[in-house]
Image (cartoon, rainbow, N blue to C red; front, side, top):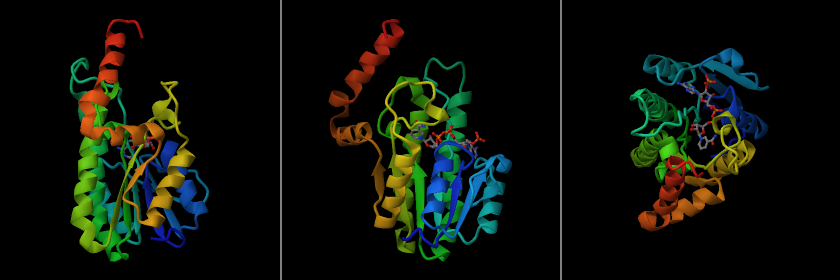
Amino acid sequence: MQINGATTLVTGANRGLGQVYARELVSRGAAKVYGAARNPAAVTEPGVTPVALDITDPGRVAQVAGECADVSLLVNNAGVLKYSTFTGAPDLAAARAEMEVNYFGTLSMCRAFAPVVAANGGGAIVNMLSVTSFYTNPLDASYGASKAAAWSLTNGIRVELAHNGTLVIGVHAGFIDTDMAALTDAPKVSPESVAQQVFDAVEAGQIEVLADERTRTVKASLSRDQELIYPPVQEFWDSIVQGTH
Ligand SMILES: NC(=O)c1ccc[n+]([C@@H]2O[C@H](COP(=O)([O-])OP(=O)(O)OC[C@H]3O[C@@H](n4cnc5c(N)ncnc54)[C@H](OP(=O)(O)O)[C@@H]3O)[C@@H](O)[C@H]2O)c1
């Protein structure tokens, strides 16, 4: 699909990658860019129309799908990361919060907007996933589980919505230079690079974006994950546990 002239909606558009997605859509000539955020007053990007939306509120998600019935490109960007291990976390709160936003929130948006984008010509749904959809790192274990669930969701709705002519794109990335990755000094890709790759994919009809070299390497290693992916993860985690990292 062409972004020029399209009506679009980005969740979590008030900061980080979502703000950059919204900016890139404006610069590519989108006719309208709805910027959804829990606090719509924080959506300050020029040319972006603020919309109040917490994606974990199914009633509000349904209302927004009614109010923004002209959308043909939905970008499910909103997400949370609690840096929580499976067995070391004090309780299930972080795991539940990540699943609630990253999986159930995204699912709720896909369900509400599938008929909207179909009615507007087929359009596209972009789901912001992660390299951690592909493997588990203890540092962000429960986040990875939620992104793996969202990857499964993305593959499933692609099949379910193909007859509507809806393009469903999964976007996987390692660290991106936003607040979410502020705690680490590991190499990061810029949000601008991710946004450009994603909207090039929308325009090219491409179903997957692997946004950086590490993500491409991990995806290519999946059939041999226990040999190629997990031994260095184990080594890294052992060094954390032993305090030698
Ligand atoms: N940064 C990375 O290294 C990285 C790597 C791979 C994938 N990702 C994914 O990329 C996406 C964007 O992340 P980011 O890096 O821009 O993170 P960020 O700077 O922490 O921004 C997260 C955005 O999600 C919004 N959000 C959180 N919960 C929400 C909810 N219940 N309803 C609506 N909006 C909600 C936040 O809104 P508030 O301002 O109200 O909190 C904020 O706008 C996420 O899906 C993330 O998992 C990030």
